Length: 190
Image (tube, rainbow, N blue to C red; front, side):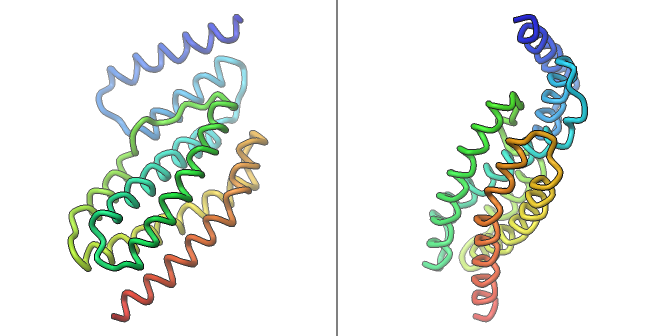
C-alpha cells in the first residue's frame, strides 16, 4: 500500500513538473514518468525499458494512423491492401504492448511523439501517387527502425516481459519490412 501511494505521489509530482515546463515530447515525458515511478519504488536502471515502451507506443500509434489515412487516400489497390494489413497488425501489437505496459507499470504517451507526428504530417500532405510512394517509403523506414529497436530490446531489456514482448514481435516486424520493401520496389519501377 505504501509503495502504491509513493508511486502515485511521484507520478503526480512528475506530471505537475512536466506540465509546468511547457510542451515537451510525449515520448520523453512518458519515459521520465516511468523512470521516476521505478526509482521511487527503489528500482534502478529502467530508463531504456521505459523509453522503449514509450517509443513503441508512439510508433504503433503512427502505424495505425498512417494505415487509416492510406485506406482513405491511397490510389493503388496494393497500397490500400498493405495499409489494411499494417493497421490490423499494429493494432494487435498495440494491444500486446498495452498489456505489457500495464503489467510492468510503465507510463505510455497519449499522443505520438514529435518525430512520429512529423512523419504523419509529411505523409498526409501528399496526394495521389505521391501519397502512395510517401506512405510506403515512410512505413519501410519506420519498420527498419522498429526492427532494430525491437531486436535490441529482445536481448537487452531489464524486464523479462519487455524482453519477451520485443522478441515475440520480431517475426511480424520482419514480415512487414519485407512486404514494404517489395511494394516500394514495385511502385518505384512504375
